[in-house]
Image 1 (tube, one colour):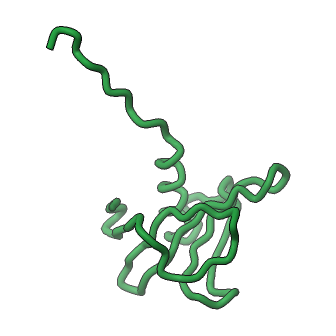
Image 2 (cartoon, rainbow, N blue to C red; image 1 turned 180 degrees about the vertical axis):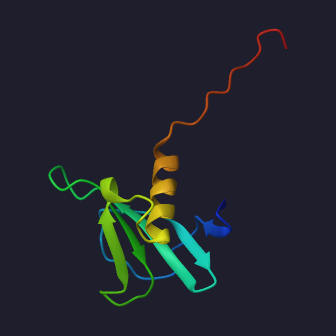
Length: 101
C-alpha cells in the first residue's frame, strides 16, 4: 500500500473490468470521490507507454494520456499512476551483507 498525497493505493485486485491484455495493473486509488484503477500500457514499440485511470466498468469510463506527457497539469489520477509506474520500474535496493557480522 502506498500513501501518495493523502490518497491510498492498494496493489491487490482491480475494482473495475479492464479488457486490455497489454496493460499492467498498478493499484487502485481511493479518494473521497471513489475508486480508480491505475494501469500502465506499453502499447507496442511505435506508440510508447500510456497511463490509464479507469473509474468504471463501461468502455468509456477511463482517462488516459501518453506517459511522457503526464506532468503537473494532468489529472491527479494519472500523476499518481506515473509515480507508481516509475516506482515499479526502479530496481530494488541492494542489500549488502556486512562480512564482519
